[in-house]
Length: 130
Image (tube, rainbow, N blue to C red):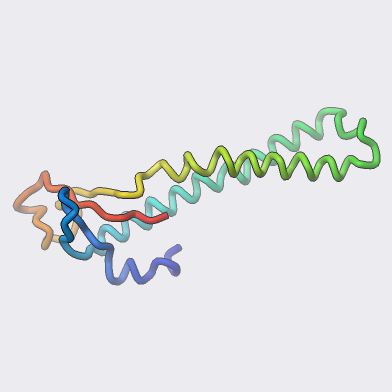
């Protein structure tokens, strides 16, 4: 992701105030957005890696596949694909929603030019991205 979003890290992300008025560009906001997007991707990848192994181990421990005979590998593949599809359908969207699309940071955690010193309660908004 760092390579994909390197221009954001160099140039910064557009900042907006509460009234959705453009304020400027911030590299600190870009770093925050990249960290949150990276964490969200770890969160949505974890179920895709862990759950199929757990489910398939449970399927293998039952005698279900022994009962289907020669079609055992085909049935196993179908179960695995169904599990992956269900995980993608039900695990990825909540993981993407862990952090809101429109993120906000206090001006004090951004560059000094955005008035964090003079107004410590000021919040600025930016598009976090996916």
